Length: 250
Length: 250
DNA sequence: ACCATAGTATGGTCTGACCATATTCCCTCA
DNA sequence: TGAGGGAATATGGTCAGACCATACTATGGT
Image (cartoon, rainbow over all chains, first blue to last red; front, side, top):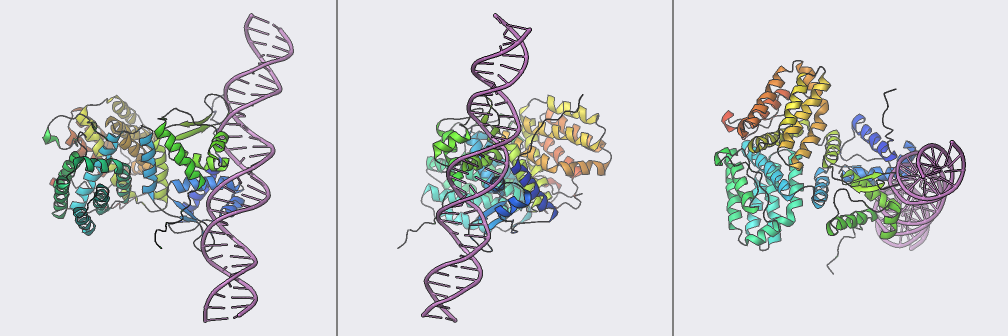
């Protein structure tokens, strides 16, 4: 007698999520639309308010709903779309669990940033945000301040690529690496090398030189995180394809 | 009278998460370790069990804890690390909200897959999983079956890159695109072109040809998703850097 | 017309109970 | 002595009901 299937009870809050997701798909709900109140939802779905609340916590964690207390048109649960927040939490926790190494995160950042810079160069996007961030970086006095505008510069590159998914990934990767970035800047002491990299990246993007932008990004990250692997696409630099690991992280 | 700060009460479940995260960092908790029971945790943290449960739902959503009912050494909450599951939920929901386009997801997949293939080629990883998936694809009879082994092939490429973060991204991207992949295979009817691409990718990786592997991946995705943008790194193909969009998605 | 107050709907929190599940313990019986 | 089977128990899952803080809304008095 085959055909057995694991019991796999679906929990109440999972049903709630599934039904909300189904209404998003069927009714075409989108960002800005509001969900019924927790009590009303509980009654309609025949579950307890606790289960509705657990579903809300999940959806909030995934960056698709936001809840406001009080009363009025702005109160209650509202559909949003903030994938970067969820990604940041994800990376932070898995880094803390030591199940992702800093080298893997930096490698991923290099991948995304090269791709973004190349795309931004190839399609001539709006570069005012990048330029403004460059100027603010020059005027910075502390490492924290520098890193803040440095982040803005690199995020501007990601946004210039026109892809919201890779931009969200970039945002959350930067967020996870912020503490290391500050340490790296303080360790270097002098930011002139980093700024030279930035201007080289900026020039390449302005000139529409995709390959040059990618190369500049790689040189920049290599300076900020010495010991990290190179992109194997740059095969002219040699056959050494060893997957490098950070030798200094603090 | 300045110095006011927004009230921003932190909710109870957020405190619970913060304290669990702090214990992960301080006590060096890692995958496989167990958390106290919900009742015990509630008592220790002086919050209600509901708040502890909401925190658990969040951590479960982020792929860092897993709960088992019953009694014994396997019961209770256990630390895990499954970022891919969380990423899949994230992509699925944000795609449903129409706040991410299919083109953005496919672009991101092209980025990760080119990077993975290039890395895999450059560092000569274990290729048995890729080879096995290729053989199974050849033996497939239905589109679903083909896509299943096709996924295994592409995930094997990601794993061969040696980066768990990009592998998790690849897994979740494939998961989100599964329905479209099946449709694309059925639309094409003939899978010989796709298989030729696969063998070309495989040959390039085996030969350690990073640039060739990246080019083969791009050609493959271009065939599977016609109308998607090319990588601007391939500048020898022409100055057209237009960010292409899918013209057929069903 | 304006402002203060009561009303009310919202999410946030807590308590306590009960259920289903799965292990552990221990007693009974062969 | 061993094995089988039920009771005890600890776990997460669910529910009901209450109370609080918040923030808008309606009402009434000035």
